[in-house]
Structures are given as structure tokens and as C-alpha cells.
Amino acid sequence: MVFGSRLSSAAAALTLVGQASQALGSIQYPVAAVTADNYGTLNFTEIFASGPDMSNAAWERGSFHGLTTFARAAPLRCFGADADTPYDVAVVGAPFDTATSYRPGARFGPNGIRQGSRRLGVERINVPAKIRISDHLDVVDCGDVPMVMTDNKVALRQLELANAALLSHTSLRSYSGRSIAKDGKFHPRVLTLGGDHTITLPLLRGVAGVYGPVSVIHFDSHLDTWKPKQTTGGPWLPDEEIPVTHGSYFWYAYKEGLLAPNNANIHVGIRGAINSWQDYDDDYEFGWIISHAEDVEDVGWKGVVKKIRDTVGDNPVYITLDIDVLDPGMAPATGTPEIGGITTREIKKILQGLAGLKIVGADIVEVAPDEITQIAAANIGWEILALMAKTPLAE
Image (tube, rainbow, N blue to C red; front, side, top):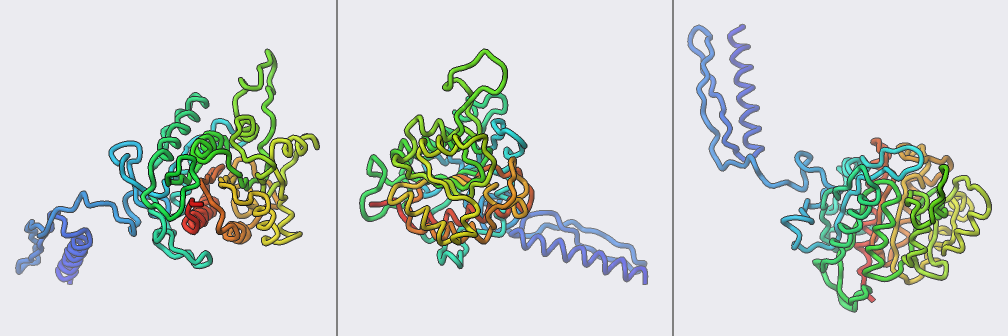
């Protein structure tokens, strides 16, 4: 009885090894053939499974082993050996959180969002949006931009240069009609995974360089248009020397002429406290319209969509989404959570209602992360890619 148990266990182990070998493409790993003599002694003879050695087999888009890319997009060394490979959308990570004002952790956002996207796929059908992204766009994941931890100005400059490099290429696909880019060419679009919200400033510099000033749809619970000010003791610095933070980057964007004029930019989901009503006056002066989080209750998601579309018109549009626009019950892992936020169902409906807008780029920021928050952020990114897939950047 013991002999039979030992033999059957060994045979089962051999079967599992053989099955694994077949699943891995007949890799030439040693496999033990098991025999037994009349006394029940087990003898192992080493043999090799036949077939090619695939131990360094290529990454598989549909698998859950190996590289984890955003929505299983193909990995690409966009700043190295594959720099000349064309694509339509580059997903890139910006692991940066040293300009946040409250709780850090968003440097882990890019990895977290990718982990949260494992059940998604650019080759899967988005049923509510009625589209398969890969039918219209070739999406690649370029990995993360190396950003130093010890100098914010250097780190943001690294991101600015990397983003500009990605945008400078010609996209894989071209379309009928003239591109809305200033040079008339079709350029790739970039979806950036942050990172604290400061990263939006260097990203806006890149898209403005290609398309001119853009209308920004800013999903957030805070305005982020505060004038930079020195909060510590003197000597006082001029405004241009005060470091940019995740609450002042839009002030810099306005001063640099990156935003579309005539109040063609909109905040959505605002509900954070302010220091004085002057903050709202300044915000309007800097080119913004406000939709509060409560508007979803008052006018519904369709009313919010109408206000957004009325604001941005036919301009090129950049979407920046702070995950704290969602209620912390649905996205708790963020730097500055505010109660009373938008739900995941509502944000999906609002985004799907923006179909037809010319989305030139986007970012998702302030993901600290945890599993709930990174799954929400990943699905939002998937919806943004669907928007890009629906509307080419052509006149």
C-alpha cells in the first residue's frame, strides 16, 4: 500500500511536470522518468522534453505572467531601442510625488494603475462605449519616465523632455483630412499615469507645443489655480522663483499661455474648501468655469456633460483627472480626499458623454494607491483611451 502510494505520487508529479513543460512550449527542462523495482524502490532517470527552448519566449499580451502593462498594451522601449517604432498612443508612468501638500504615495501610482488594469485590455470590447480600442489605435506602454527624487525642477524637466519626445513622432495611423496639429502631421497621443498633479504642467507644455493652447477638462475636488506663495519665513521670493506644487500648476499654465482663452477650460467635481471667495474670482480670471460635485445631483450627469461641451467647444482638449474627484468611499488611496465626490458609475457616464471631442492627451494622477483606487483609476484610463479611439485628431 505504501509502495503504491509512493509510485502514484511520483507518477502524478511527473504528469504535472510534463503538463507544465507542454504549457511552456516544450521547454527543454530535465524531467524525471520514474520506475520501480519489485521491492518498491523508486528509480529516477533524467530525460528531456523535446522541442525548442522557449525559456526566453516573447511577452504574451493575454497572459498574467511577465510584464504588467496598462490594459495589456504591448510594451515598448520608447526611449531606447524601439524609439523609431510607430504607435498611436503611448502610456507612460510619472512616479513623482514630492510636490504634494498633504499625503505622499502617488509615486507608486503608475505601477498600481497598471496592476489595476489587469482585467482590462485594449483588445477587449468596451460594451457601454461600443468600441474596441485596438481596432482604431495602436497603444503601447513605454514604462516609467526616470524622475529623480531629490530635485523637483529636474524631475519635472525630465518628464517634460520625455513627453515632448513622444509627441514629436509621427503616429502609426493617418486619417483623411488635415491634422489639427500646427505642423499638419498626425502625432501620437500620450496617456500619463501619475504621480501627483504637478506633472500636468510639463505635460501641457508638450501638447501646447504641438497643438497650441488647449482646453482643459479638469476632474478634481480642488481648483489647483492658487497663486504660488511662500508660506515659510523670508526672505520673500518673486512668484517665478517659488516652486510649483500640485495646487498651483494651473496658475503657471495660465501665465505661460498653455490654456485656451475666453474661459474655455472647466473644473468638474469641485468641492474642496477655499481660503476666501477671491480664490473663485482668481480662478475665473485665469480662464476657468466650475462645475461642482453637487451638480451631478442637481442636473444629472447629462447636465454636467452639456456644461463641459459648451465650455470647451471644438477646441483641442486635454483631460486631467485627479482620482480624488471620486468619493473616497470608491477611491480612498489619494493624497487629499474629500467626501461627497462623484461615483465610479457617474464618472464613466460623464466620460462616455464626451465622445466626439478631440482629446489630444490625458493624465490620471494622485493615485496613492490601494487595490480599490487603482482599479478605479485603471478603468478611467480605459474609458479615456476609448474616447481617443472614437475621434481622430483631424479637421
